[in-house]
Amino acid sequence: MRDFDGYPGRGRCWYGLDVRPCNPDHVYAATCNDDEKQQWEFVAVNDSEMLIKAKGEDRCMDRAGVNIELRPCNPDNHYQRFFAIRGGFNEYRFEISQKTATRYCMNQSHHPKPGEVFAMYPCATARSSSWQTSWWELY
Image (cartoon, rainbow, N blue to C red):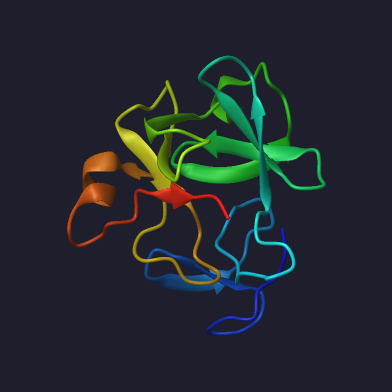
């Protein structure tokens, strides 16, 4: 996980509306870098499920309750196996969920900004006109 240069200071993250020191195991939005836009690799587990691996590391996204954390990659860990509930990982945009939490989508609590922590929120909330944060895109 990398520090970010966003409000309210280096090494602090947004947890909903609360700002506090970043947890090094949590996954959060970072400022885009033109040299390296895609920070994640999608590793197929089967026809529909993927591990979401931090580029250049052996750590994958892992659902711990509603939080998304980075843990050593393990394709047998069903909390690390994600699927595209709408769209597809190879399409223009997609929503990320898990078979163990199909009513929940991975996103953030409002429009993304640097340092905002990702978690699992109800898909209906993420799709609502006030949030509109359910879609992911590859760059």
